[in-house]
Image (tube, rainbow over the protein chains, first blue to last red):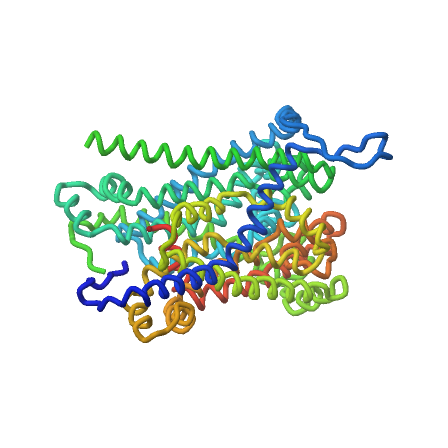
Length: 319
Length: 285
């Protein structure tokens, strides 16, 4: 934290130089912020505004395309079209299922590993963290390529070994394709979140843990009942970022769609948007779908923070 | 680290803990190891699922084949990725940290609301921005150019958040006060005094953005049609789609993937402490 020197110790400048200093401050503040906010407007605000605008208007060509092009307000019609499109709804369902599988698995596994590393029983802690973290350095598209090849019969030693044991698994079949994607994401992000949780656990005061042990709590009780509640804010943060990231599901299905008939070109909402915009050139549809995706992201993020705040308040009230 | 005797779990528990951690590490490392082995084997071993044996090594031939594929376009992609990622991340880190510093050290009205708006930008999916950005780029004639990919990746709201936290932690108010007493202007103070203290923070933001840009795949796919402007990620994606028709691309994709991971691993190993400070700053506070 920044500690401010006590006012008595600092000689006060005369009022005139003070207002000059204020102006200097304002100029400096503006100069330091200007580059970022130029980008903010150019590649964030205007695009978001354009997406909303595009979703309500459409380019109409009256007179069989011979008349001048004009822009017509279509209101919620595009939204109705998107929301009644079964392929979009299926995409939402796919992402929902993916999140339901992926987020609890990731959080539980990462938290569990971090608690084990923090328990003092694990050996070679930094080496383990390094090994776990390594896949996070691998770009998403390359992680997807590695696993796609590990799923592909004829390339994969895993499929080959399983076949020798008379087990045939189609990793990219109807029921396996979503778990297969969850696995890719889990592999990429497990170690990152272990490191985040472990860092938070390191900040837990040792006296608190020792007090719990003195009170007779076993290692499991200490980990789940004492340490875990103390790193709640990290857990919420991880859930939030993972959720935002998972809702954008794109890279893995896009790559798998090249090899698996189970993954079509509108598999996830992001793929639907890409397909609508750049394959079908229906900008209004793509914009409406992206606004819906954005609304879902905001609503769910808000829900997560609200829900955790309430449960925290509830816990405080009962204790 | 000394652990009190009471905290130490029993021997059996300790063994179980180490087995669980060990298996998890194998889960994360074995696929990476497969990539290394597959990249050093010749095509026959690869298609015979014979990657795990210790025969048929031909790493140098694989490299030569990789750089000869499609008239050596892989080298071009690699250079593109380096320019996009290193140039973009450096510029982006400076821009974000300067803004984060201003958020920390200056007072103005509605500051916290504005900061909240910046943080909210983290939430917006890239897919939402892609179509409008594409339309803007095509309106200004920038589509299918270097700039179409380079400019949008400079925007890093999370870097502003990190910059503010680092500025709180690394730049004490007394130092700025002292510089002001010496009659230095606010900007001069930032560039001569504060920026130097913020150095580690800039490196951290740089590293995060470097990884993000190197991984970036969606934006280049939307913006670029000229293969010679592709970054490695998009190039490998396009080779992988060719591989489903002509399998001779498989070894190139595998060796190319390994080479594309290497710079990030090197950066990660050399600059580990910066990475960690970013992780903890981003999550603990």
